[in-house]
Length: 185
Image 1 (cartoon, helix red, strand yellow):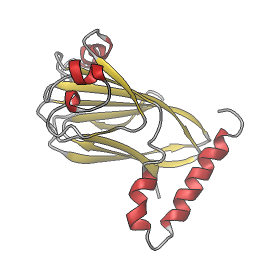
Image 2 (tube, rainbow, N blue to C red):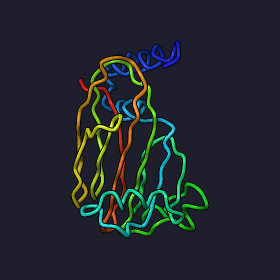
Image 3 (cartoon, helix red, strand yellow):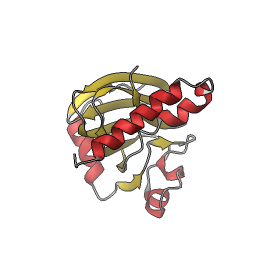
């Protein structure tokens, strides 16, 4: 982490905690919580021709094939509304060539600057989800679930950059997917 970047992350965390003390916090916290989730995400979507439950290596390889589509986004919040990535208005490639409503995968990666502390990861949507921090599995719900919310905590003992990877698969149409990072209180 470069000089000054740790201070920015610490300031964001301090502002979040101060906001949580306000009487109107219940209305404002959903917006503040998403602050740390905003990053420079690289996202790939692909038609899931390989079984994500039976052959993870082949499933992951699909994200790098020519049929996959990609976008750069600031937050992992995708209102698929049962239409899949193709229904998102992100870029022409995703809209024209993206997977449809079912049997698709998504792999998103970002390097996020964290101050030292404990963090709560929150993923919501149907299908399976796996979240890795610096290659280590933090949240593992690799099953074909109905829409649910999944939570996991992790700790950064010192300020620094962490590589976050979010893997998500869908078998049947889903209303959406969202991933948030917030301080674990």
